[in-house]
Image (cartoon, rainbow, N blue to C red; front, side, top):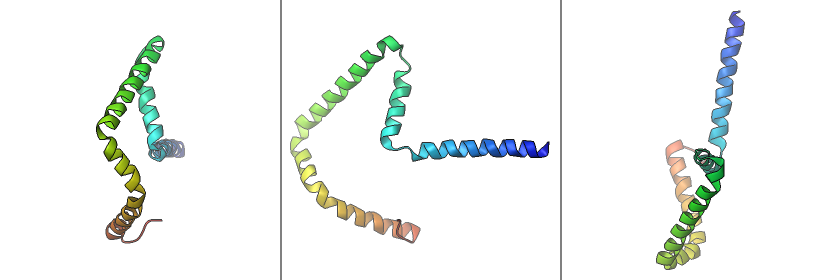
Length: 105
């Protein structure tokens, strides 16, 4: 009887740990899709396409306005970003050595 209770508790904790690990292992895109699916499920099925269309138009409009206002800065970022990557890697490596005491990886 005692072993069954202990096994049940152990299995429950292990299942929760697996779920937490799966959630933590999800990337940004998977989390974004999960948020979108939970948001879109609020609406009735026959109206979900309308809500999706409104979201797409809003995102496209925001991106268009961003590009229209900041096109020069976007070009500068695209040109300079590859050169910044080694610098950012060096800063990150130095910070991890400082905080953790050894390089990651």
